[in-house]
Image (cartoon, rainbow, N blue to C red):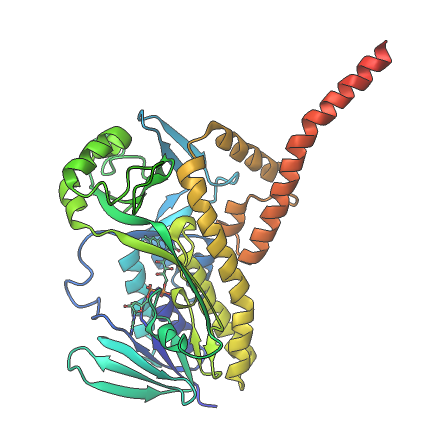
Length: 450
Ligand SMILES: Cc1cc2nc3c(=O)[nH]c(=O)nc-3n(C[C@H](O)[C@H](O)[C@H](O)COP(=O)(O)OP(=O)(O)OC[C@H]3O[C@@H](n4cnc5c(N)ncnc54)[C@H](O)[C@@H]3O)c2cc1C
């Protein structure tokens, strides 16, 4: 069997997969729609970051990249909650102080992965190649070269669609009978803002505590901020797209910098004080959409397969989209190694391993939005988190909080979801039963004393 593969999309997952497969003896043809980010100018611009945790780090370690990435990462061992009245409350993510998620630059991560792929002699990378057609039965795929507008077709034993949430490859597969597709848009959008570096202050060059993921929970809306190595923070507003009777502060109502500034003075005043480029950022940065995509089967004719966001785009509230996509790369590589002469079987084994986990993290990511925007501000919630950390500290074999299982362990997402549901049930039953038992005990004691 020829070990040739075309990977569509040189994003985070496509580049990592290229490294893995080249090292496993595959000849990799990696094609990307955009221009080469190594060309001057493309990697400059605003810092945009993402959180990488245990799963992503494990996958990067396998490619020998963990140290390179961690060197320029910022540890975030907990979240810093900002109230309207400018009070701060720090909540650890875990009872284990060595646990932290890592804020890394998205472009630096993509560049490190691209360089690692380019360093492999079995990998060729071509840019400005837009995938437009797939003939899965023949194992061929067509691209338009955006420099010349010429269309050409290439074929290989395996074709991988790592072309992101709006995957062209998936779009083509979708037209085939038997391909199930479900897409749900979040009613909230997101807009990125910036808190630049400062020259003085307690945390200079940072305007606030750098070792935390900052959250301004405001019920139906929130803002978060992650630190960048240059001392700035990338802030993201998550607001409803449309105002409602219960939340009048949607992107449709707050459209211009003056209205946004007035809103910030009420809701996020401590942040506004350190946002000198507020008006420009608000006017210039677009409102992005967020969606969950579930589809199946992920492969077609035993030759074309989806991976990463192309197979399972999720909302970003657990910081797991890239982490999950990196796990896909490990799973697909392992499945191909386990079935060296049968790609169709390998693709089925990969989907069997990953689909249930993709569905589980999609669900947990949606739930985490409610936790972040509504619950993190509540005293009761914080008390519960403290109790969960206490339990985890004393009986880790019986109780591990969901956040720990998802972010600081590599147990399958589906198992983390199932186990956390059981634990929640036990805690709820215990919370109801404990006062009843106390009352019963007091009654018995009272009876006996008469
Ligand atoms: C606001 C936000 C915050 C996030 N924060 C986090 C976080 O903190 N932690 C985390 O783990 N994840 C996070 N994510 C999710 C993460 O960005 C994605 O899960 C991850 O980028 C998926 O990697 P991918 O390689 O599958 O897709 P992408 O990174 O999107 O790469 C796809 C590549 O395919 C190329 N492409 C597209 N169409 C074509 C075509 N027709 N032909 C050829 N090439 C094509 C694209 O140009 C791109 O380079 C966040 C997402 C959002 C939106």
